[in-house]
Every structure is written in C-alpha cells, then in structure tokens.
Image (cartoon, rainbow, N blue to C red; front, side):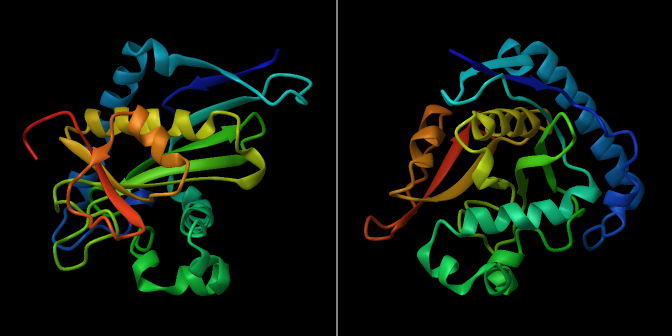
Length: 236
C-alpha cells in the first residue's frame, strides 16, 4: 500500500504588491497589503497548530509506484491563469457548461465573477503544486455583494468558495487538503463562515458534509444544486 504524503505550508507570501494592483472600490492599497500580511501570518500559525494540516496520509491509487508529494501554498498573482482553469473544472460539472466549452463558459458573467479582477479586498485562496511547482488544484473564496450574488451566496460578509482539481490529479486527496487549508485560512482571517454551491448529485457534496458544511436552508428542493454553509461563529 502506498500513501500520498501531503506537506502543507504557507509560503510565497512576502510580496503582495502584484496582488494589490486592482484593489476594490474605495479600498486602500496599503490597507490591503497589511491585511494580507497579517492574514498570512495567522494562516501560518493556524497550520502549525493543526497536526492534521501539517501532514496528511491518504490512500493513493494502487498503480502508483511511489508516493505523490505535493505542497499547498497561498495563491499568488501569477497563479490567476490557473484559477481560471480550475474555475472551468468546477463549472464543467454542469452538462450545460461542458456543452458550451471552456472559452464560452468562462466568458459568462455568472462564472467570470469568481476570478475576474483578482486581488480585491477579501480575495484569498490556496493552490496545490507538485515538487516541480506544477499546479494540481486550487481552492479560493471571495466576497460578493447583494446586488451581484454568486451561486452559493448567503451574505455579503460570508465568502463563497470555489474549488477545482486537474482531472489527471484527482483521487489523491488534493481536494481534501485544499478544502482543509482554505477553511484554516478563512478562520485565520476572522470570517465567521464559508458558503458554497454544489450539485446535489456531485460526490463532492459528501466531502463538504464531512468537513461540516450543511444545507443553508435557502435552496428549493426542486433545484439541482444546493447552497451549503460551514459556520464556526455566530457573528455572520
């Protein structure tokens, strides 16, 4: 039996100048940099305090000849093109998006809002890379206003997460590691909860449930997707 050894670390966060080139309306660039620096420190501290986040052992595919090693780090501005790729992986769960194809699907405003203008206040995420720094998957969140909600919108103060893993890198525990790291990051940034939207028939729904996500109670039973929320504070 082989295992996938996942080393989780917070690194590559010393220079946030590129990530702050497009601050949100009314936001101060220096405030954003200070916010990111403090959040990154809290994130690193939260990882060091969590044994489960330091190293994860998961069952790998039987055909693997050796353990697959990957690192989870904070998303940087140069990772944005890969976020677009993973946005399509997430959207392509829906047959209608697969039919449209990647270019057309990502041109839709309902999808673009999850990555477009990356670097605004509230944007944060983690990315899994292999030993050669090749990206394998990513998970991120951003805040959405009442007038432009996302699929899994609950509140303008609760970030909505998006997660995607390359098709050829699935089944190795990468999604689990990304989700766990993103939750730790959100907690370190003093958010009270995270939300998401998932198709009711998507196997990932059970993963979210194992991490404490529950039906937010705002989706009709007739809808194919359900909005879920993981709340660790009453201050939502």
